[in-house]
Length: 274
Image (cartoon, rainbow, N blue to C red; front, top):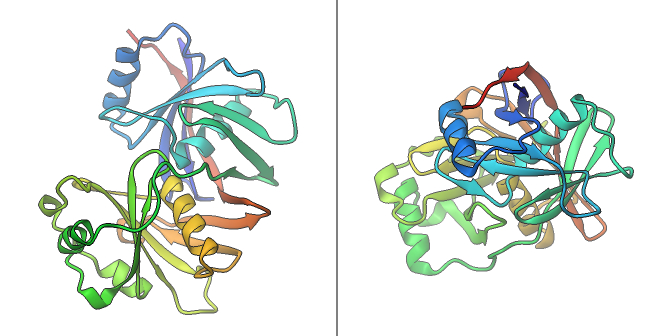
């Protein structure tokens, strides 16, 4: 039997964030066992905690979707860190260091909140006009709705659009069949100034919408803060259309963009994997 947690990420209230399944002590599990359990949980991601290989890391994590393994993802990073700490993990230094397929990722604690340092982009820069036209068709957007577009791939493969406002983001009714090869698309739009949140974010993955997405918010933060289109520190809302209340805290500290949020332990137990 292995220790198991289910963590709600980017929320301070259980059932309003993005859930993550975490299996501790995953030594000895095969790739197929991990993949099969991830398919069974049917969550956007399931993680498996292992002893680190790198000398500077506190733990190693493997991240599986229902369809395969990811080198990095945001809400699994924060949820795995919370589960590792809850199980008695003690970091070697002030910040936790997570080892994953994308390398080493720092995770810091500020009170009860966890935040990760955004990894460098695998692919960034402008989007080809033909690709942008296809994505706009899939999201049923008009040309005047879109302010900008960037590749925002830090592992999962995001393409991101900046829209004119949060109202336009929330109004999107996508045509899932029209995405084609561009099946991981994020959109962001500003809320009126003075509110609790500065931006509204949505993430579309093939035929589904992800409730709250750390990797996408990390890449958006790098883009918008880096180009002066967002303040040095802000809070983004995500999951509104799914009746969630995700809150993602993004800030620049020196050369790093940090992406943080609250985490809630929803389920604690054990799991027997065949």
